[in-house]
Amino acid sequence: MKVGRNFDLSLYAPKLELGPEGIWYATHQETVSYPTDGNDECFGIEDSSFWFRHRNSCIVELVKMFPPQGSGPIFDVGGGTGL
Image (cartoon, rainbow, N blue to C red; front, side):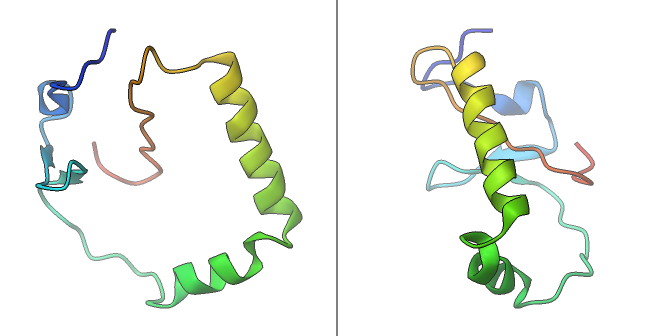
């Protein structure tokens, strides 16, 4: 699939909408049981964590193997998004 600047992701994922800053968001948010400072804790250990280094290396290698077409986006759907 060729993705251009005017790509309408909602045609493929109708539960998403494009925000004014160019980021796609879910139209409905579920309550998530996650500590409010959870991201800060992860950022604090990311540079010294084997798991994060390995994960990031895997992402880099996958992008090298399967680069986006042109300047196309890379989607991170994560788990449990309900999309």
